[in-house]
Length: 549
Image 1 (cartoon, rainbow, N blue to C red):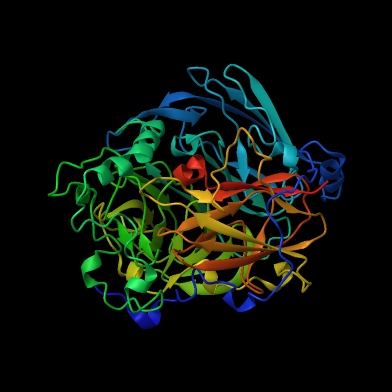
Image 2 (cartoon, rainbow, N blue to C red):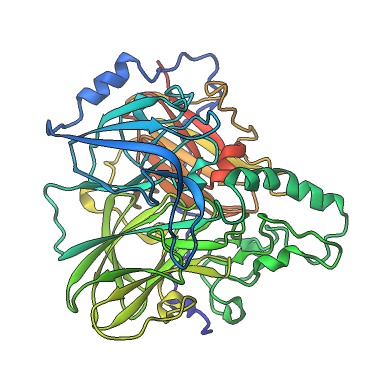
């Protein structure tokens, strides 16, 4: 394995975006202090919705959430929950300004409630799909109709926001087309990434239960020996921070430890779901918590991959979506350069790269001009010594192995902190009205992930709101006090990384780093802010960013 050329890796600054703008601003309390909050059905929500530019066109879809046996290829046919019997669900596509009318029918077993969150869409608050904060959970055997304007073009997706249902098969791409599309290309390919365990090694609920009790059990065993408990390799443990990636020859592309690392000579610590010893320099240490038997691209295992068929010389737009629950992916197309055009739906100044790092909940659009032959599109499960695979076929050639590692994976790797917002979507210069410090707190040992030291209780969503007011320019300082990276997702808004970085709704915050983001408070209501690691969010790394009434 070739070591990564330190001069070719553009990663310095990930986790420190906005460090140059940490100037003194008015501090927000983050405690609510008895403030009355804008409810999801308030007149202010309707007034904001009336300002959205609407085409008058309506796109109707029916979505049935139900048990299904799905075919992941290679003889892997797990039982899971899915929309209309398939994973990923059928793509929903409309144009900016169109109204989406989506009827959800809940046919899940055991009186299981569910919902749909429209990830990344700046929609009206009561359609955001987060029960009980903004809607009543959809009971088994009943239906709920979501109706909202999709205001901004881009690459999005949708999934439940109940428990750890995200880690089942209930997700699908949502593509909002730009009626004035400025890009020129010949075709599109939606590339949906996912880490998969449901119906193979157990269920996400089984995994969650083990995670909550697992580290405490292991701590009780006393001497942990030389085992990396998922956090000792902080950025400061090397002399490189994030910029120097020269000596990675023995890392096998970000995965020095396999799941077998969970068994120690000090005793039988083997866990069915809990992953230990997975480290990644790109992610500042611990890469993830969960063992996944499969990593999927478009619902296919690496041994039996999805195939895109095209012609040499054609320019294709790839819309890359990470729908995973615990895995960041390093994505590259063998034999090709990728030109990044968008992240999280919003355009950036174009940047040519060999590979990109995609955290859970993030999306990237890239352009690629296809060569002649058969090429592997690899999604390396960062730090987990595993990967997903799809193929691009434009001519003759043999199929590569399921474990192929194209050299582009060790070339110029791009993350959002190096990108710049396109001029037409950069936030206008404005005085910051309020700053909230969002401390990411907790640890793997106690599995008590939280924000500002408080584990969010979904039954009491208004208990500790982060209060903002309509019309404010808001700064959020994500201060990661933990030994693990967190992809922080804000509902109903996009924020800007620093003063000129990309517009995003999900951003990676590295261990012991601070990321500052700015947003305009222009969408009243109550909005979840949470880690998009499904297990971290569910255990309590979540907060309510609520507008003051």
